[in-house]
Length: 141
Image 1 (cartoon, helix red, strand yellow):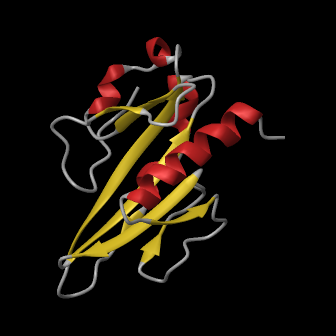
Image 2 (tube, one colour):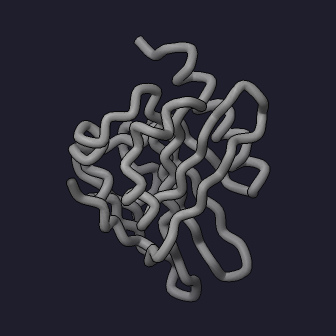
């Protein structure tokens, strides 16, 4: 059963992504479109937006009790996506954690993942990824 903290985190991230023009699907069992695929993976949230000849996918993992060993075991690197012929594409990876739990996150994740710290207020603190390539998943433990 999902905790109220987890539900709150997903609601906050969903609202932020929707403000940025993403359509958002919660915990899709299967990729929602034929030009996206993954194996043995289910993100907490999956967002998609197309704007100015660019298509962007956002995968979101909400970790109420961050464990980098458990996080690294997820099969998120199996996600692939093929943008339309005339568009460029990218995959945006977001890890959401509750306020006070950032210390449990290995900051090597910043090489490919944005880290959003969800507190009591509505707007998350967003720590951008650094040195990442679109579609890259360089984090390993």
